[in-house]
Image (cartoon, rainbow, N blue to C red; front, side, top):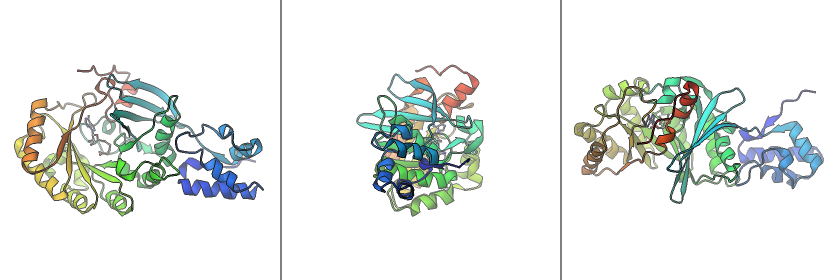
Length: 354
Ligand code: SAH
């Protein structure tokens, strides 16, 4: 008989545990065995396969393997930067590839996860945008990135998660919604909601959905320009969701909001533009992250000079806006959005460190 096996990693921890308990009972096995199996799905020591759940009776493990699946992502490439940043390329069952970046910083370990294979939005400076959209990732492929890194030897554990890898997370809300639960749940990865940031171009329906969740998940908006005219040239999505509406949604978001602002030399980095950006940030009580343009895949743009980034930051502070200049991490391994996949597909050499 050809049965479809239930993918336990596409379920929230509560759903998978109750499915496993019900399954155990229906096969004459005590329900607690189901809970025991559920403990192997996520957390600090995820099981690679049912047969590795050695605290369960052998026959029950075999039975589980017949009815359920816990799919892996295949690690295709790994690179490590001189600054300790590690970048992983995973391939999925259909051959699609996605990137995950692990960024150590003091006692923090931030994982930058992908939510889609490719991206439909075509932001003009972004390597993922240039490759186009392939498909949405399922929860087991998003949370699976965190799971796979926890299964490395030695394992990598995230203290923070940012949805700043490939894709637009809020265009894949159903899967991201479930993934947020898996990441945050004490029976999942138990990462505090305040340590999980969803980054978006300003996809309004998704911002509302995120705002409706009761946990304190954080929102980052990729602003990149303070006016519709300029923003539309950088981010085509601006014609669908104009900046004013995105700013309204960010101002209505009752938790901390960050503005992401990639510094493009001669494009969006003048003092006048800083003044306009400051007005928007003040309205949203937003923290502004200035991101040096990652070279590689950045199609015709040049980074703003270091001093000019500093001057732009000071101009924002004049208006009382909190601002940080993001450290560029993993430059030597091209660890920006979409760059590893692009590099592999085109077989380009990594960009040299400066
Ligand atoms: N789609 C979401 C999340 C993925 S991109 C979003 O746009 O927010 C994560 C961040 O990386 C975004 O702020 C994006 O604009 C930025 N980014 C893309 N390409 C970049 C590059 N070449 N250099 C620096 N930042 C880049």
